[in-house]
Image 1: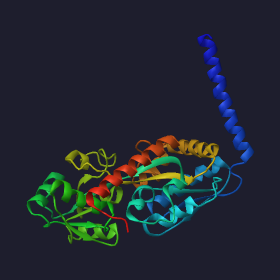
Image 2: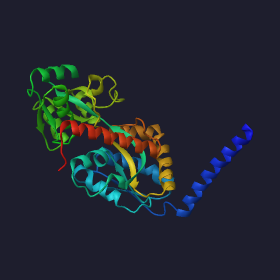
Image 3: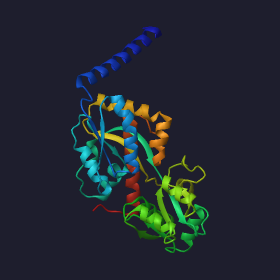
Image 4: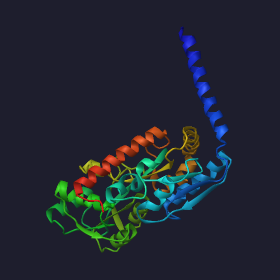
Length: 328
């Protein structure tokens, strides 16, 4: 077989695959009705991102899309609703590190299993920023660590309780680096940020968008980000990995459906979302505008997303083991 013949065969096989996928979708009639996308609290970054992307997605799919907010602790009601939906592509959801990586480590019993999801596409990472109160003598992250190491438990660190990202970082620093902060638990991260802005605690972490906004106001000072590499939102700030904090327990956003979702539907949705994530204006407003960084594997294949989730689960498992958190 000549090279030309081989090329013709490859083109023919590729065309046949495309036609086959199109035919399969035509037979399923997908989507045949309105699509529900489950997400978290109304007005939050996940909700705004989902609503913003759903408008052009609905136009592309030719069906209306309804955003349904599922609130509840640790995103459990949201994950349960998605995992137990009919696998016909008419119920999808946003998902994150809580549902896929952290909850199985914190709860002895969950109403869902992480195997009950079909990854569709990764959208972006939601990193945090390390902040200190405005009066703090620490001008950079190394100075902060030196202060905490010199006087253990003298600097207060606002967290959202056991299992929160801030708590994991604080306990990791204590056990692995000998850098001891006084853990001050709050009911939520916004309360912790407010406490730092008021000078009531020395250190806090917060989602990078809102955290940097507080820093620009002068109420707190930003020292570093929790991103694996320097953040596109604050390239002047070092990442924690640059100063030897070798864990990454940030959250992220991605699209999923229930397990058993037909391959042709997964790929149709992946292709349509991929087009949306290639739209710079759309991404700047509804992805980056909500603090999500479109870093790899953003806009990639379902397989790349699945691989990312496995790595994220391993990272959380390692971090939780180090800090000694036990499931309850």
